[in-house]
Length: 96
Image 1: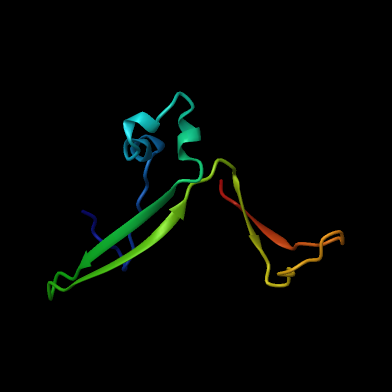
Image 2: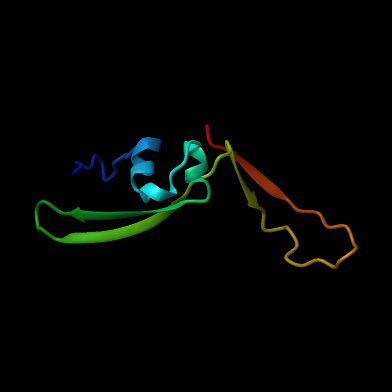
């Protein structure tokens, strides 16, 4: 249970804690390999102390084994013709 500060709370989860969520038979010696392409669903329930009203929300987080996240810019073509050159415009986000 967390106490919100100015409507926010930061949560950190270790690799070990994520690995505990995996079925035991899916784990191997390369621990980081187990987390590749894993999508974690984060669910939050927030209860207002004054009224007792609870609101819920959720989001997903994708695990990756690289330090960078790539996202395509809106100016990248959405179609191409086989055999012709195509240019893609991407943004890198440093995840350090």
